[in-house]
Image (cartoon, rainbow, N blue to C red; front, side, top):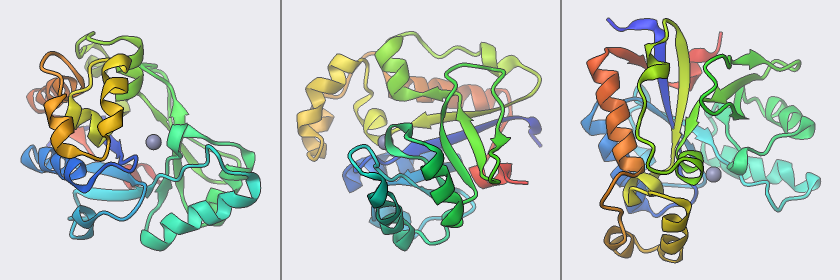
Length: 232
Ligand SMILES: [Zn+2]
């Protein structure tokens, strides 16, 4: 049995990706028997027959352009699709006092809107209203924007205790995104999986990083889990 003190939580934000792109990411998880919490931006056929012991669904609303009065309807659109969701991760990690109050009022139990990139000291904590706030340890778009091509490093996974959240996006796994410039050049084809395949990066990118991470998880027998397991 893996030691539960050393645990990785894989998460993904679907970010309105095409069905085929999400299926690619789900197949990768399934092939390696990895659990993952997927923050969904809408309805996906591939999520309808999920195994709930392997895939947890959270909500990924976009409040970027929304006014305060629209927050609740934005959240409710996704809650209607996934009424059993326990968690929420806003697009672009948007959070504020009114949003955290809304999440709690809507019956959600945790949010994943804090980025503590590679901060080994960061811990989950309870907000004053009872919402559990989960820090992200590593995220693909931060990696390729700020330290592209710096390969996976095992050091933080050699600590004696950690609960790290690694957040990926299906499109970056699909494209093996290598840098902000690479992604910007691919973005016009966002809705076209065949074209996205053609512009996939051949060198070290997000998919390479993911493979290095999961190989290390397997080799070191590191525990993996779903975010609801962090609720007490
Ligand atoms: Zn997003």
